[in-house]
Length: 66
Image (cartoon, rainbow, N blue to C red; front, top):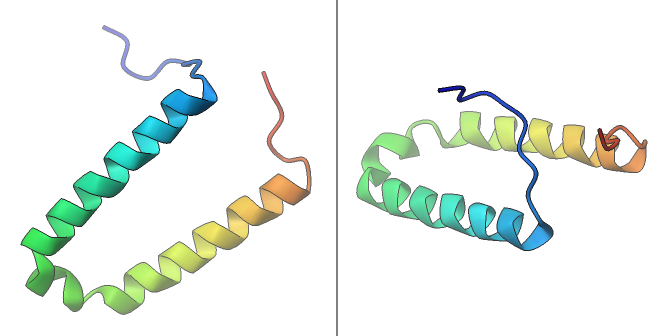
């Protein structure tokens, strides 16, 4: 079984996957809220860095098919 292989998804399948991950994140975050509160600043910094990276890649033609 090859877990790490290339996948091809349509735009709506990617949307469903993002919705699924978002909902699971909300469930886990609400269940373990006391645990995650102490790491909120770290998670915010990581989120900002990732947002800047993906915005840069999107606007600099860094994501190319194939």
